[in-house]
Picture 1: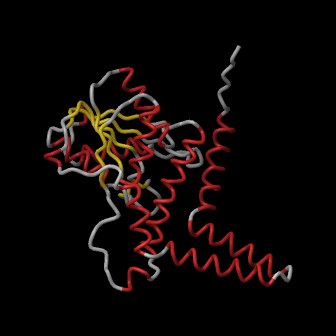
Picture 2 (picture 1 turned 90 degrees about the vertical axis):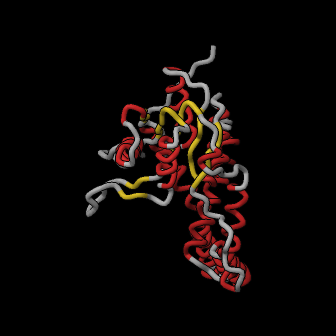
Length: 271
């Protein structure tokens, strides 16, 4: 007989926290620091060749990851998988699904939530609603367990949607999802309570591939409505494309985060 064991809250907390730590170690900056630390250890052990190789590799990797040309390329490998459409060309659907990750909490000295880098997801949802492309908006997004006492992000997004002209009665929220797979499970529960025939999935273009895979895994076919594109045309064709830039490092990190998430989800059988 197969027995299903539900992990305790402490186990779930540990798994989530560990996953965040491990993922940071493979992002460009974290990996650079790890390779540099290996170089320091090799130097202390008088392994000059290995130490030099580690320091050279760390500098080279950080340089490449910080180049605008590389950031645009790696982001485009995700973003080109689903192309954005003008609002007038977006098909009409029963609901629009908004995935969290767009708004920062009210941390002192803030007096109100701050819009995050992916807040265009929320604005795009409001525009689609006002254009009658969806009759309802479903919002999913919780809060990490190591940040107690904060509002679920879906509640903050709901308030912002109302501020931007969406009828509050047309918004439904789910507050428990802490990652994309859990977001998909929450939306499926909404579907089970009140079925819909079609759905627009609204998230950042780079996040769309893992999001589509997660929703397909839970049995909810959705129509991609990507936005918040980062790999845009018009990047300088001069030597500046190959020089380190903090914004480019952030772009590379975001792209690798999505690719790593997709690979891990496949390994865990979640997509």
